[in-house]
Amino acid sequence: MDKELQSFLVEKARKVRLGVIDALGIGNRGHVGGSLSCADIVAALYFYKMRHSPEKQDDPNRDRFIMSKGHSVLAQYAALAEAGYFDKKVLATTKSLGSLLQGHPERQIPGIEANTGSLGQGLSMGVGMALAGRMDGLDYRVYVIVGDGELAEGQIWEAAMAANHYALSNLTVIVDMNGVQAMGRTSDRYSIANIPGRFAAFGWKTFEVDGHDVADIAGALDRASGVRGCPTAIVARTVKGKGVGFAENTHAYHNNLLTAEDREKAIASVMAM
Amino acid sequence: MEKVDVMEKTEKVEKKQEKNPRTAYGLAILELARADRNVVALDADLCTSTQSAQVEKNLPAQYFEMGIGEANMASVAAGFALCGKTPFIHTFAVFATGRPFDQIRQGICLPNLNVKIVGSSEGLSDFGDGATHQCFEDMALMSVLPNMTVLAPVDAAEVPKVVRAAAAIQGPVYIRLNRNDLPLLTDESTPFEIGKPLVLAEGKDVAICVNGVTAGMGLAAREILSGQGLEARVVNFSTIKPLNEKIVREALGGVRALVTAEEHSVIGGLGAAIAGCLSKAPLPTARVGIADRYGQSSHSYEQLLEHYGLTPEAIAGAAREILKA
Figure 1 (cartoon, chains in turn yellow, blue):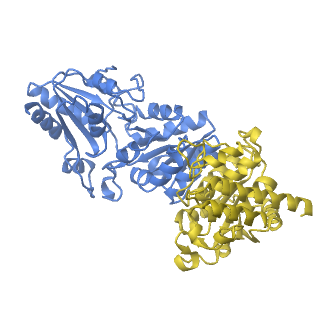
Figure 2 (figure 1 turned 180 degrees about the vertical axis):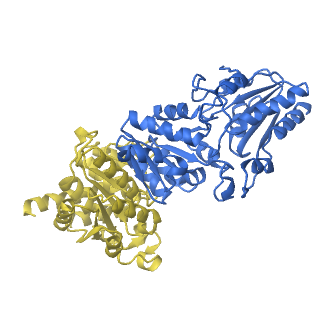
Figure 3 (figure 1 turned 60 degrees about the vertical axis):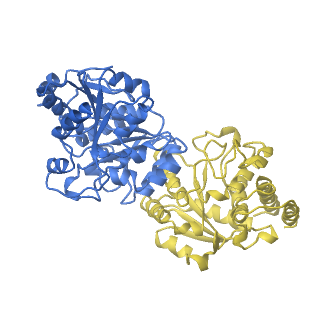
């Protein structure tokens, strides 16, 4: 990846993180950790890989993105605002009564493709979208971000079987493998080891990337879209809370608030990345 | 209010028309899918039981086998709907509503997606398989979900109308289907409209509210009551939701009491829906249905219906009691 594109994406990822902090506000609990861990992936999707446009939201051939780990939608809201789907000022209203931006993704929000939040369902929705695209002879691609903790949901593996059965090469799952779930480290709480091996065993072509290296992510997305005959899984090693020092690698900030002072520190931390 | 002379029509049509609701369903979904290539059928390894096999056989490009995975099937259907398709998902009623309840709630009803859920082998109609495969909760589970329409066709002749009406709605619809032959009480000319009850027979003393298999029983109960000097109106409710007070009152106007009869738990089904509509000024109502309990195996559907208290005699008895009260 050329340096210019790389720094463009790094800046977009920074804007996504700042948007997450905006959406979180001061004194309101929100899912900051998981939103920050997938910020670089979300930036690579919206500002590098995906064919999409806020001016053509109903384009039947747009690429689809589903945030299956719906609590991390703050990153998606930030990316959508950055891409022009709605005014950035709306971010600050997130989760307030009557706001467009709900605690979990809902379809009435511009750019949101599916309702998620009850974990484990987004990959199945992606299977439906991929099947529909094939049926219509459209070449759009479907991207689904899941969490590593989310992989405990059995439905993920029902969807993995379905995608393999139908050889959905137009479907890519990206695992935001931040290693931390709501109650602690995933390895301690509920073992979900060898994620690439699990997807491979289900017939998926798998890639492993540094989930905070936009060039690495973008490269894997490009390789995934070239795969024929099977679905693709990109397992991204990430850090929960990435970019906000005090929130990194801890479940304490899975769903937590920022004080006014925290907010300043968080912004400074993201600016220093 | 629509009225038909059921007894007369039954005689005329009985010999030539399909009496099995699921067979009628297979033909109806095939016809719909032929007319609209955006209609897709999904099934969880029961396509010959549910008769979605008609689509698989005749329009294989519009059929998607989902394996024995109902939760995935429901969410895949949401994905199809989000891309402009009209998915019909199929399995037994118990697996269509209970198992993927969360997928239906979160992924289909909340965003008001155009997914049709077809629950086959409802109630006791899968008599041999016992409690795990019988379902008295489906109307309750589906009715409680905002945006959901809940339909229970009265006979095989009504099935195609129900399927077409469901397809014409932009939103989720649940259709419950009986596995076994049912008496033909309507024909092609009988009107069907979502939300409107159908008076199957007139009477002024008591109204017997029915749907599905209890419709024929209600008419037989009316005959029993007639021999005892009581005039029963029989009103069929193929729509459980949405129902509104005005229309229900209109259909039930003038009688002194009601009996509701359903092949469903007495909690949360037809009786509850009608009681809800009339709650501001209720009529004395007896509710015949499955008591708060599970099913069991039997070699005969009729034997099982009788065991669970769903018979014309039970309905007529409930009517006499409530009129005395």
